[in-house]
Image (tube, rainbow, N blue to C red):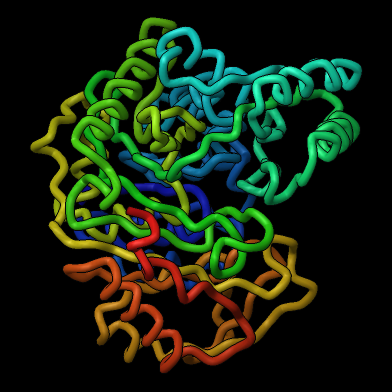
Length: 438
């Protein structure tokens, strides 16, 4: 059996672990004792190391010591810190982009300029601000065009730094003030001002070997903290996919436009000599004018990746091997024709760090008997079905699969209501009231 190493300890890596132990021996470098990952490693006969997942030398040393066949890195910080670069330098088969290739995620200005170059018809109006003194004039251009503004830090923010008019920034002056603050908080970065797109936001994760591209089912994310899309933006409270690659509000042309954009990006990176394989994660809006680009990530989304892996029918380890060996094709990737829903449970302070460790209880056997998947993230086991949260991020996710999106959503709600005890919160409305989207 092949020996696979995954890097990271979030809900996303829990999903990787569950799929990989189907047919390989699992190893992991993790930052905390994630119960899902540790349980999978024990089942498969592998090993784990607790340490800095963004330390290229640490990850590489562990890979060499354990004779790892393939390493899969699909988390933002390890990719941005060059973990793939170090693995490749040591002749280790690594799936994921190099630091320069994943600039498409950690540098929002680079990615939108790239889009403007290769796909201008799908790119919103934007301005790059190099210093605070430029803000007033640039904001005036948005006012003149009568379009609202999205203010984005240039670098990574874990999904929590982008602010939108009018949900977070009520006036144009608020945009100036927030952007000015970003210059002080992140002095080595520029600020990106982008046209606010009116439409429906969605994500498609493209699996690629650096040449070929296969689209996963599109996903609809719930980034806002509270029901009815209220509150602060987060890394994602939950997500759903449909029983086909399109979401209910999408057309065949929408899907083909997304594939066209992502293929051109992959071709451009290859032409520029960048090493990129694994996942190109495209964020788009369906607008009255058609598809418009929002952002790229260079890895599986979280929670979107949990959805996709839940409905992946084919072998995940074989898929990763096909990606490394540049043998990816539509035949490499099969999905069951069912909908999936993921919901995260979070501490009440989220998206801010939690002030305390919160105990909670799960009846894991009953939950699994319902066909529900459990993906631990910022939590550790304290005993039989007893757990505690860590003072950060999202705690754990529940996922269900069903013929209909609404049915999967209801199953997750029932599992949480009946078999979870603790002071964590979640959004019941994820995957419900879909008529509002169509």
